[in-house]
Image (cartoon, rainbow, N blue to C red; front, side, top):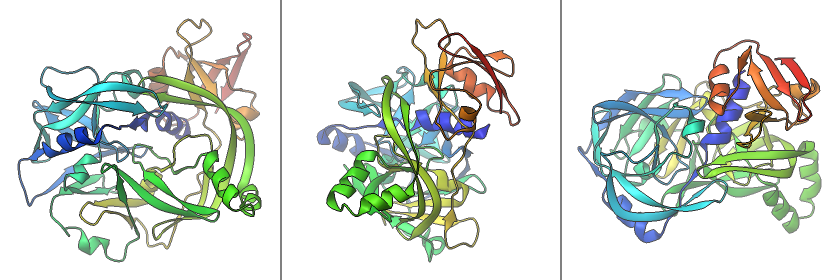
Length: 406
């Protein structure tokens, strides 16, 4: 059931799209301080379905933070804590559903990663995702740590993190390995060039898009075809399914539901810098344009801050990563309305899924898994952690009960 868990995590963790006035950015980054210089720290981390989880010590306690290159700076999942201080700055923060709120920028007076103490790290406190993160991590570290001069190696084989401020520290490991240069859009969000057979585009490199590969919205394909009408046939040839579906996305300020025409595409080959991905499936049901952390199954990652590039260290000696991410078991989730008496969680099912073949449809309610009632989003997360066959009970909006084993 890993496919289901991945679909859930993908749906909720890449929602941190933080924007602000340039003046607020300058003040925010200028005040971050490090306790040591010319240092190298190595520590054990966790990688959960592509999410990079780093232990951070705060007030003598270890908290788990997800490292998210798609986030401009840090987030704290919860209300403001007593030990946080106000920076005097604020920003207009926009989530993945383009909903905006003005939020205060807070400071963590002291946090420790490995042996390095970081002072005045900026965070935005918001409990909007607490019900969906379900305690798996406590906050987010953003790409501002790279902007401030740090480089990172995420070893996805041995689940280790190496963090350093030394220029050229990873030079020997990087030599001859595939890489892609990035541009720090707005100084804090890394954009990379990705080449497809139908065209090339700038995409956000977003490790917060956990276990994801490619998000390419339909509007981008339309733009390519508008410039070159001969591409329409090429895109049609790559299309393996067209379906009308509900897209559900949970942002910091609530969920969003849209009905869209989804196009499922099969890319024979994609180039990210000089890294080649083959046999990649993607859909056009997202609004964002980004590359996720799916490659961490096959390669470790170096983020070389001074050289402004991502370097991929293959786990095996191969010329390309063969992805083959078609996957047919999973289904998406949507939170039902508070006054809905039929159930707490609805499902979103595409036509290419096995569960669709078994009669489950978008809008059906998920009642239980292996006999245990589902009363909230976190119940699904918890019940799907274990491997093995699952027995699901669903209810249609008309009240019909359906049972499925997957």
